[in-house]
Length: 265
Image (tube, rainbow, N blue to C red; front, side, top):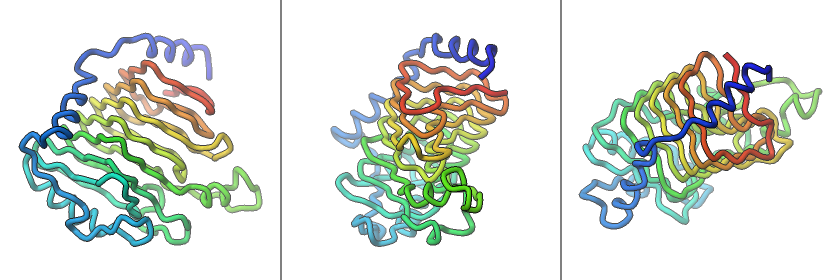
């Protein structure tokens, strides 16, 4: 990191986050207490098994289509369950005030050879959305160990190939992400791409220090992004900011293991 980038990063860390960045706390509390008149769309109502073995991809796709079509819907992933889901794109636009309540665990297929060949670089993608909230104490688990073992960074005899990013917010605005754990990503954990006004708080990222290319939060071509009170441990950059991203605010970030914060125009 050059001196200019380092100073820019320090300045970003010193910018305070306003009260608006914490507004999703109220929404989460209201949903847990009485539902706030919202319409729950439970993935298990669409056939999800939640045993970590059965392929629940189609159930998630069907539940998403329903939730996306309703005002004040909650796309509900129940707690104490493990849902195996292959590469999936959760596309908008959707109706107003959609909440994704991730209380359980979404787990990726373990075998790279079982990956959807049509989506080699992504796993869970939320795109073309406005005003949604992704929240809850759930886990996104990329099952990355076999991907890491096949990386040319760990073994020069392996062919170099890309791997999926666990969670992507793409071409979206006014999105809040709160309270999730993202772990063992195949490659990057969480990417914010071509988006604006994104609020991330209370997110935990966990991968071993020798996991290759596992950036924690990667921001590209995006603006007005705040990251608050997050704990990140990875085998690469904790946070990376690239491709003319602007107005990035960070506060109370715990980084380690990892390569720190990288800012590159």
